[in-house]
Length: 220
Ligand SMILES: Nc1nc2c(ncn2[C@@H]2O[C@H](COP(=O)(O)OP(=O)(O)OP(=O)(O)O)[C@@H](O)[C@H]2O)c(=O)[nH]1
Ligand SMILES: [Mg+2]
Image (cartoon, rainbow, N blue to C red; front, side, top):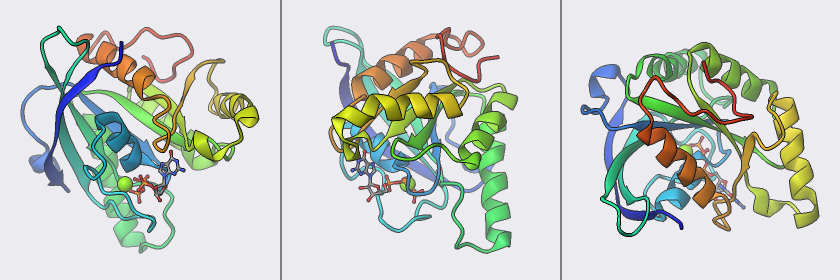
């Protein structure tokens, strides 16, 4: 049974730790290369099209954007609250070195230090083999002790016959076991139920317990 989103609201923008929202709701961050489809994934999950800003111009998201989502795991359940954090993309060439360094520390500080962060969804483009920057991101997150869920998005842009193969390629190059990456398409809604199921499980688990899933990466 798919989860039900009760509400999804923008909470706040932040460029420094003092602007991170207070409260200890389980939080999930969406990380990936610039333009890979982070904001679109967030909108697909919350089923709210204009919630996070989607853009054809890479590098549009320049601060951390926090959202608060209420959902019911099944219709009779009490509503639960999670928070989503939409992060600026990495690998965007057209910003100055200074600005890039500022972003990098803003993002890395958050990913290392945010106590309520339960897991990071690391998004790769299903159409291309993951790049070194994707592997670097995974290494960084694992090193920071984060639970990582790898999702391969834009599946709709591949012919159906190529999708499984693309997923296996992504898994292999990210060092995951078969089945370790979640297929996703913001366009078709593919993968939203599976990703929500994992988010719900991780939200329920205590911060130290993480998610005991096979094939995942970054568990410590
Ligand atoms: N066909 C298809 N297009 C997608 C999908 N996800 C995102 N896009 C498109 O890819 C472009 C970038 O999407 P965003 O969601 O803004 O990507 P982002 O990773 O948030 O980008 P930045 O914040 O700039 O790093 C937009 O034109 C989206 O419509 C998908 O699953 N399928
Ligand atoms: Mg974005």
